[in-house]
Amino acid sequence: EAQVTQNPRYLITVTGKKLTVTCSQNMNHEYMSWYRQDPGLGLRQIYYSMNVEVTDKGDVPEGYKVSRKEKRNFPLILESPSPNQTSLYFCASSPLTGGRQETQYFGPGTRLLVL
Amino acid sequence: GQQVMQIPQYQHVQEGEDFTTYCNSSTTLSNIQWYKQRPGGHPVFLIQLVKSGEVKKQKRLTFQFGEAKKNSSLHITATQTTDVGTYFCAGRRKLIFGQGTELSVKP
Image 1 (spheres, one colour):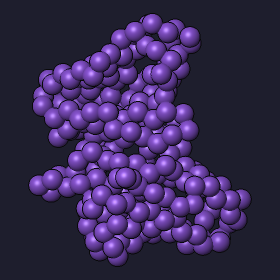
Image 2: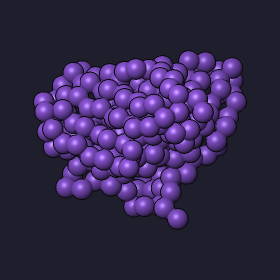
Image 3: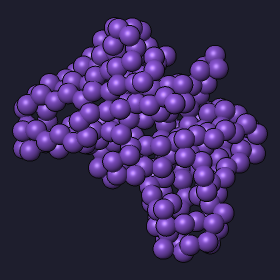
């Protein structure tokens, strides 16, 4: 089944404790992206990747890191989480057709609470 | 920078009434996508509009892309309780999402 998976789905942590949220897709998509969703602010892009070893900042990259060592995986790293990073996080992937991004497929989401 | 604004933020309708959400961009878009997110779920792609003035229909849903490619709308005819959720427009190039419109439907 074609899908985007995220782990963990729910996470409670404390300020400053490094964490990683994994994202994996089995559709051989070139493009992958991370979003955070907050009430009243919709979906905001954190980082995106056009292909392996190619990553770029989105609109709200501060406090986050990503890596794209393999095509299928795009982990989101919070080196020192802070309470303002409490949010619902979505990973998404899409194929690139002629260099253009097509429909995005979203993972189920990761709900993060930073105390 | 490019911004996509969506109105209204919330809309509560009686079942059977029509519903429209509007999406406006500060810049010309190459295309626009619409997504639906059910409560507790993740965004799911509905449609993509590419051409100026384009109109597409999916059953009771009608999507329009403005002539100037800076605005778009989603219209739902005769809403049903299954239409409940948040509808997002997303314009590229970096796929900037609007804030979303949360629709609730009273049966």
